Amino acid sequence: MQIEEIRAKFPITRRYNFLDHAGVSPLSGPAAEAFIDFAREHSESAYLETSYYRLIDRIRQDAARLLNAHADEVTFVKNTCEGLNYVANGIPWITGDNVVSNAMEFPANVYPWMNLERRGVIVKTVPEEDGRIPFDRLAVAIDRRTRVVAISAVQWSNGFRTDLTRLGELCKDKGVLLCVDAIQALGVHPIDVRAMNIDFLAADGHKWLLGPDGAGLFYCRRELIGHLHPSEPGYLCMKHDFDSRERKFDLRDDARRFDSGAYNVAGIFALGASLRMLLETGIEEVQRRVKQLTDQLVEGLRRKDWRVYSPRTPSEWSGIVAFASDKHDLLALQKHLREEFKIVVARRLGRLRASPHFYNTSEEIDQLVTALPAH
Image 1 (tube, one colour):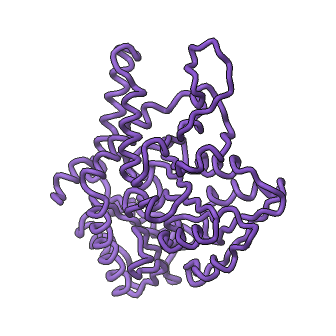
Image 2 (cartoon, helix red, strand yellow; image 1 turned 60 degrees about the vertical axis):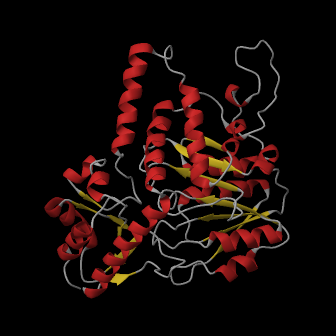
């Protein structure tokens, strides 16, 4: 990896030491250029010279490649929650069915399932243990009335990473559907929906995918597409072209059956540019780089006696490092880091949270550790 060539694609590096990719990432340079190119072309020629939806299909293929999915299993959403709601509202539930979740989930992966309680669906919440979701507790929670296990690939607060391969095998063995919120993993950790037996996946593009708000991905396993009824049907999800005189409710046979109306074309183009950049770099290489940076950060934090709350075992680590001290005002410190050193970190649940990406440098990690007061 030629780090200077990569950093040249991130203009924010000229102004900030940005370490908050688990929050809202800066747009990559290619994504910003795609926005600009679309705006210029659309203002000059509308849709007359460019087949925008044909280009979107190419981006769909890149998204499928990222997931090891078929292109017809992938479509675009405006956010993670929209994709999760496709699943929650599309399954034909029976009173007494249940969903297995856990106490660490971000609200986007909580409320779509809680909303089902009015239909007689029970949400079973597995408690955490020392910042982890014990696999055995998940396994015990699954019973004969469990329809879905809903879980994040990486937990937003402390970065705990779920062993999706192991969980996918369990769900497959028990005949339970696995629905994954991948927003804190996709773009930095390889996700193979085939090998992991993932049935549904949703992720917005504004975090580790380095894209804009309002443009994300939704995956539905091919065999399940016909069993998930769209909650927002519109003209785009029908087999018949909108110009047809026929008005027949005939849904598409692929993931486009979940589309309703016009796409966020500009956002999808920007997301697609970042996807291509990440695929060209190689997700395994991105992951290796992020592991190196976060290991360095954890070592520095422990050297200064800060408490690290993020699991760091080989199967549990992620790009998120949560840390805290009871001797310092973390809100004031977060503000000081940004104003004095241009270092951007987040504060979540009473802890500071750093989340470097592959274009960050060892020197930027050292700058953060040096700027932090000793415990």
